[in-house]
Length: 291
Ligand code: URA
Image (cartoon, rainbow, N blue to C red; front, side, top):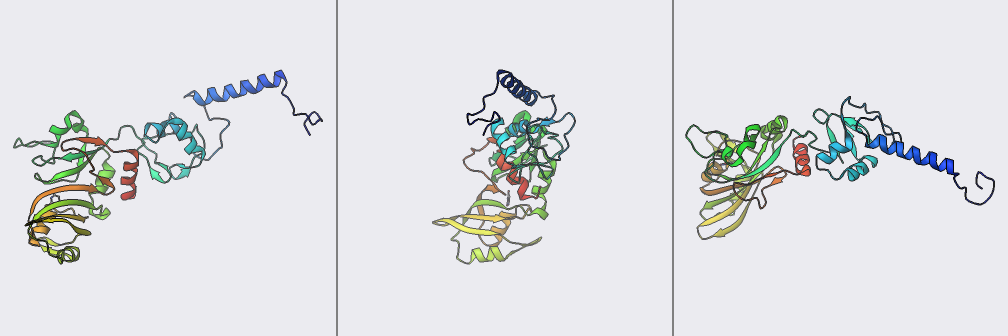
């Protein structure tokens, strides 16, 4: 039955229709207006809006999570958390510099001031921003971007491969601190025939001047004549560690390339070139160090 007491579907009167359209327009205006309050039609939560904050969906979209429409869908589906609390309101205002925002549990780089880059460092480039001896440094590769960034860990002058650069101090600190044990993977060209037992030796531990060092993983990729290409993963941060371990095992390194740092892979990035990390990659880095 309808409210008119007949079986005919109720029709809105012209006046009711006009009122409904006006209400819908008000809701849209409120939602679209950056300075308006809460969006009346949305589901509530107990997050306190940050005075002068930015709309959550705008922060998500700016961080590269997706279009605003997609970000609204994520919020509506309860997949977005701010400071540990699920937020379902499209209009919630947040402080992206200060608050921790996660999508599906993965933290997103919300602050637009933060920069995360991957660089493929060529050999004969110093992992530093300046050099008193006039050698080529990473600053020469990065140009003016370099002023704001610091490198996450170091590679030897002759080592090539992946270096992460950021101005996110806490993330950089954790990625380099031994407590967080972030694994790094290297491809090494070594001299000599690699015997079967080398893997066990490296995984068990090799005696070096400054103590035992062990690999997390080791495999021989290729053995050609008197040389081998090997892959080694370790979470050690000591100086020249891969070169020293392999030399101590009787296989000096002739070329060394870092191919992975935690979840970030070098891939096809060309030597001397940088690329911004994706939102997903930054989220994975945060997760790797418990942020
Ligand atoms: N181990 C080395 O021997 N050199 C590097 O640059 C990095 C790890």
